[in-house]
Each structure stands twice: as structure tokens, then as C-alpha cells.
Image 1 (cartoon, rainbow, N blue to C red):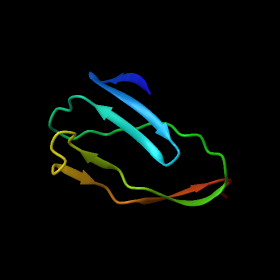
Image 2 (tube, rainbow, N blue to C red):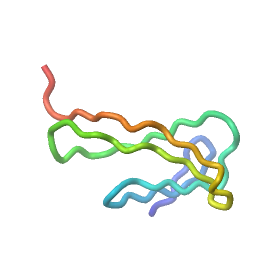
Image 3 (cartoon, rainbow, N blue to C red):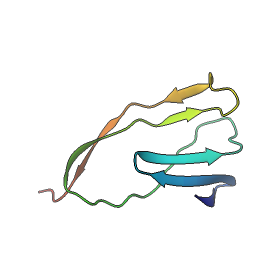
Image 4 (spheres, rainbow, N blue to C red):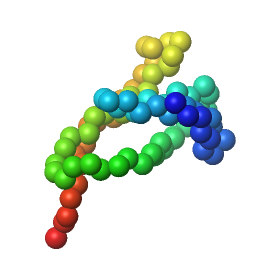
Length: 76
């Protein structure tokens, strides 16, 4: 894990075999966009998992996005 800062919000980013986890101590109310880079190792069409946010101390407060489609390789 490595600690990072973006727009005044501190977080830890941890990559693992099945996904990427972000740990944020404090997230002000409002709309937030989280972006991070990935490295492509194979060409093809893949499905991406959904993003989920959950309160550590009150997991009943949670939300998630839909999954998506990722296409890698050469495009004409």
C-alpha cells in the first residue's frame, strides 16, 4: 500500500490479484471522481468489475456502479 493525496484527500491505494482497494479516512459529502492508471498486458475484450463504496463502521451505508466493457489492442 502507498499513501497518496489528491485535492486535499488522503488515501491508501492497494492493488491485488482481483482488484484495487482504496482506503479513505474522510470523504466530504458531494460528488467525487476516482481515477488511477492500469497497465495492459493482453489484447482483447474484457468486462470490468463494478466500483463499490462502503462505510467502514456502518457497512449498511454503501453504493455501487455498474460493470463495464474494456477493449484493448489495435483499433482501425
